[in-house]
Length: 383
Ligand SMILES: Cc1cc2nc3c(=O)[nH]c(=O)nc-3n(C[C@H](O)[C@H](O)[C@H](O)COP(=O)(O)OP(=O)(O)OC[C@H]3O[C@@H](n4cnc5c(N)ncnc54)[C@H](O)[C@@H]3O)c2cc1C
Image 1 (cartoon, rainbow, N blue to C red):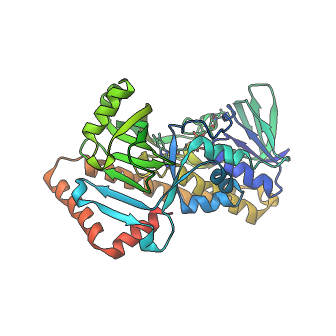
Image 2: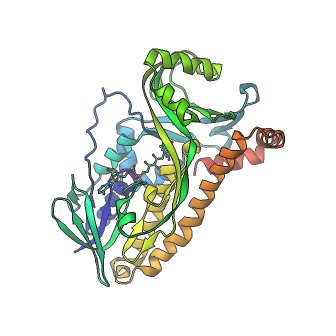
Image 3: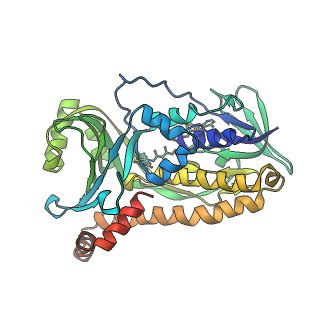
């Protein structure tokens, strides 16, 4: 019998599995698809994430962050937000005496870095999918599509927003699809390596730049779903022109390498646990990505769950309800607050109502003028 079975070896699940197996727990990991190995000559992945300092600290504990640094990442030291570029509010690492605010990392590089930390004791089931879940007083049993049966004290579902485990357990969710989608484009930039990430808020949705190593960047263009689909269908040359016409001039000349689009949803599990099953990461909550918080919330889930498990020891898994309740009590309201803040931004900046427009301009102006407020926001952004 395993102490823990983690289902889903994405960024969040793999970070938990690596850390707990290193701490001497009997851990199994079930993952549907092995991540493609890294080579320095590979172009950057389209899926990238802004990783906060707090997430970095969590990943350092297993050695995963050091492995990311040995592959590739891009620090950002300044963060700018504006409606009009001439009225930009800048948050800087220097203002809070830090060397950077965070790093932009490719999702696959982060996932691989966690996989590289798996000790020999970790039992990997990959490629494999869970098809059934049965729970009783002593254990949870998982049936895999290759016929394997796994018995564990606790199952950690890290299998993403469409979590099979959450559905098998019958845990409901609350949420909706946003009318917006987002186009993500990997671009070559005329400008040399940058240390700033910026976001322009417009009534149709934000436009954002995230720096990547060298003369590269990741652009995110939020708009109505039909418009985003239409943009994604353009040739790289036509999309480059469309981007340069719509984005602020500070982007400079760019050349689109690849692009795709994503639908956006808000989803929150009504409960984070059930008997011997606990949800983490996107399996528990999916959030509008405009502030780049999704995986950072997932890492915060993982860090807290691991801390509680370490405090309680394997013995706490005899009756895990108290531990899982504490986990839910701490994480559910924090994740809800972040989701709701994203919705306030989504509706606030999407509104054409004059009063709302004036309020948001006042908000940006106040944020720009008050050094105390700016420092608070900057410290919050670093996690
Ligand atoms: C456009 C966009 C931009 C984003 N930008 C950011 C950002 O800048 N910063 C940020 O923090 N977040 C960002 N996010 C959110 C972030 O990508 C997610 O929060 C993150 O990927 C969630 O990680 P996860 O490990 O919980 O789930 P996932 O990444 O979805 O991983 C789930 C894993 O489970 C596996 N799996 C699924 N089902 C099964 C099964 N039945 N059996 C076995 N394995 C299974 C999958 O193969 C996968 O490996 C963004 C999201 C989008 C859409």
